[in-house]
Length: 235
Image (cartoon, rainbow, N blue to C red):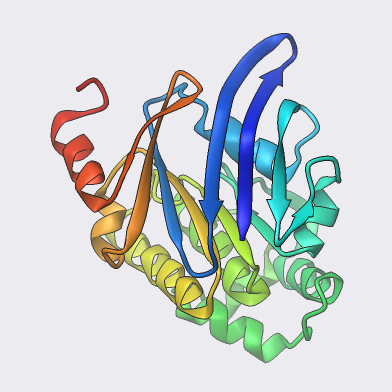
């Protein structure tokens, strides 16, 4: 289980999150929804261990182990994955080289043909693997490549920060397909999003948490996401 217990997070002197509690089991999907500035990306960065985000109190527990104080790279090796809201471009590093190293460091077989097949599954040709990381990729291609990483690494738990923002309909279907496949493999997923539209491509058994003003204000099932889609976050 991936547990977040009474988490309070600050950036500098400003408290950004208060009393966040989550319990994500293997193969479960938990959806975090909320307006701009509600703390969604802060939550993602705090969970992965970005040093800018200070955990004032609370714990992050991965399969019984307290990982609150360990650095980002150790969290990823223990099975935690983050898909960034704005994937960065890395000059002078081929995507294929990057993926082969990531697989080796996470104890996976560095199989080039397997990487090609996964990229093809995400609608990305072999040519993308020869480019520098995300260089010349469209917004949707960057997001699909991030989700290809998730499929390759098969993490225990994944945090997806707005993978559906700024993507077209075709990319949305690829992204939803990757989420469904990862869930079926037993990966627990925290999906951060503004909109319910991606949830229409995913199975109905998910949990919804509404984050506003740095606090979880409401929790429920798919019906809560549908209410937000119709009424917004102000109701």
